[in-house]
Image (cartoon, rainbow, N blue to C red; front, top):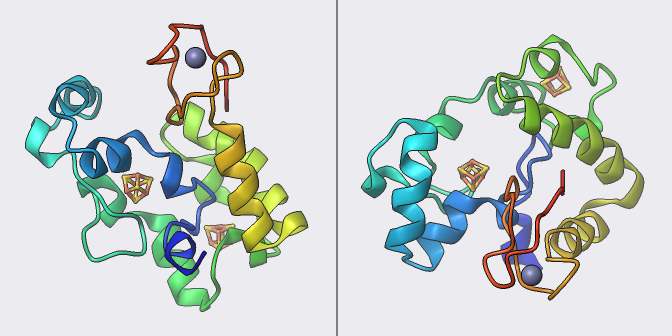
Amino acid sequence: MEDKKKLAAPCGLYCGVCGILMAHRDNNVKFKERLAPVYGVNPEDIRCEGCLSDDVFFYCKVCPIKDCVGQKGIEGCHQCDEFPCRIIEDFPIPVGKKVILRSIPAWRKLGTEKWIEEEERRYHCPNCGYEVFRGAKKCRNCKESLDLD
Ligand code: SF4
Ligand code: SF4
Ligand SMILES: [Zn+2]
């Protein structure tokens, strides 16, 4: 669980179910090639070991939420009374914002360990049980359409 706590991104977008982290972890070149144009980067830039690691993806490195949490000296937005603040309201990716608005209250309610378990349980195909990444529209294993946020 200690390792997984490093994946507890302060914004509530749990890094353990992030496609970028999974593609890098699995050294999955095809998956990297598919993700690269989504973020407007080269496939070799699709790499990350999590928000709290030393090897953080390009965009997540310069995150105003992470900066804000750092300045407040808290672990995440679940410990902040201002949630959902202007930074969250202005989050540039609609799906990400939707997930944050679901995930932070869940983190607050469950505590870190249970919340991580719950996020990991959530991102599996309801049809075949295969691991899926946040934002996936289809299961990579059985091709079932997915609608997980
Ligand atoms: S890209 Fe962002 S959300 Fe994905 S694992 Fe890295 S820090 Fe976490
Ligand atoms: S002010 Fe906003 S970004 Fe900063 S910790 Fe609170 S909820 Fe998170
Ligand atoms: Zn499936």
